[in-house]
Image: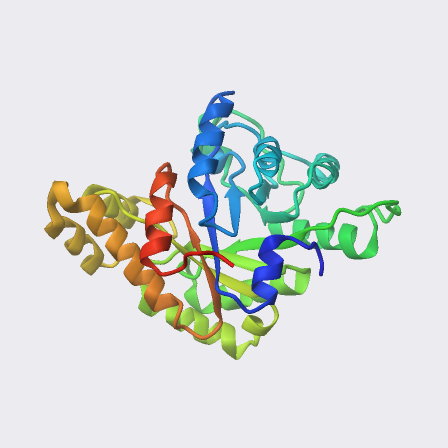
Length: 305
């Protein structure tokens, strides 16, 4: 085992994995974290802790990861290249490992101009592929990025994100191949609403044999309203929301919108789990963590291994 994490054990045993996402609060309120974490306990094999997603200041992903460890919940700590140079990243990697974190998701990070401090200076000393290679070398070669030897290496199950829907579509599987070559163990995808296009991406992934080298978890998310579906379709870069999804949410009306959003999410889970090479799903409820147990139950994934 590379890290001995619960997520690694479940995927390595051939079980269909379920991960979920927890967004840290825009405050120092620990109770918000514990409330969200407790709602996810027992229904997710590991929980992603976002790292100031959309470049908005939130509680530290490493701190929240440590809080989850103390609660008996396994975290996947996200780490972006936006705010740290290689010295700070390696320092944080050592600290996270020492605190009991066993899964690390390597991201470039959203540009700061989209967040609540657009005037801040970015770093981007490394990109996500360079970060993956650095973490792998620290784990497997026991070396810092500069080549200096490590006495005690961090043991992480290394992950990355991938968007099958960005343009140019024909190069998306090749981009995943670069991350595989750099050393990832698993990948979580952008939210899937267009299952047909995701299935075509998986065909290209299989042609490259990538599904046999890494575990692929399809991203899914419940919609709350027709307005949310339209916003994601028209305003969120890299999102692909087909008209039929928007029409289904609109037809549900305001009173039934959340119920229909959950039904759509479960329908998509049932479709993607039948696609060869998909090893699990990653549920991104976006400030609606308490709905995750219902989605997992309706998808037939309880009890967890």
